[in-house]
Length: 116
Image 1 (tube, rainbow, N blue to C red):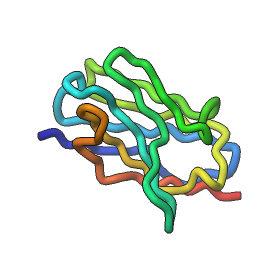
Image 2: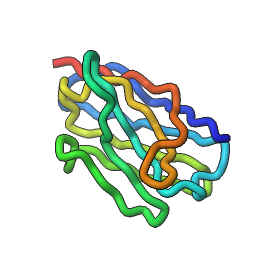
Image 3: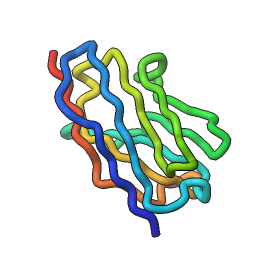
């Protein structure tokens, strides 16, 4: 069992930046990947970015070039640097630990609101 706790969300104007953090209660090295998902009101949860155990990354097309995922395995933390934020980036952002190809643990989420 591992607990994931997100932080760093908030209200920001379009064009601004936020840095999300995800702190794990145990080693993240045992997971195949760590990911960030988001869910906008009335929409399905979607994958935003993922980073595997050798730091290969994957991004949704909508965030490529604006968001950067990183990890600090020694501190069991994952980060999401979000730049040039747009109103359509608004949503609840969730950290997830991936086993195989599916998330096995989820955080409680952190709200990101981008005003126009």
